[in-house]
Image (cartoon, rainbow, N blue to C red; front, side, top):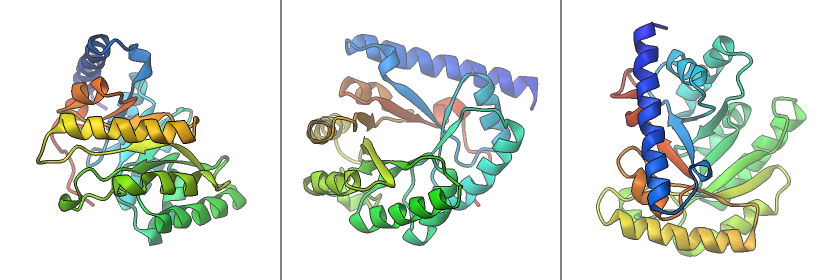
Length: 243
């Protein structure tokens, strides 16, 4: 854990927080309303440990195999950390049991079948003492079905939210979306804001809106995002070969 890398990350953390603060001020919001989720995919556990030393507590991965190993290593490096790990990538149902062992939050629930797989996995993990509390989940809203990036069709989100909220092993916390690669991000985030309002109206505890990444976090915050997922702006270019 070089001093040079720590300094590099410290500068990035300060820059990202300054961007979030400025975006919140421009939107007439309080910076405390928006969390920064550090997306550590392809980066080593030591980078996550350094970010934890700098005050970061929320980390995200998008591949179960990489995440499982990284979380275990991070736990050894920082056993007293209050870090919470989020799964933001698509989850195969046969990987649900493993995800439930390490993830505090799954942000990519996009179907009743996946919700049921995670419910069963959370129940097993709770019974085995591998979890202390139900699994928090977000419903992923599909904003562009042509891209194959996962996500529940917008018209089906309320029903899926109801399904999740009816379980004891899962806790509905809100919605997540990725802006389309093609198309107007402003329109996408505005659409997500409308959907999030509907979900929050039916389920007041589901107030999280996870939207915005390194390149578009300002626009997401302007449309009500409460959690931005930042990788490149914090950590730079990819460091590891995908596992």
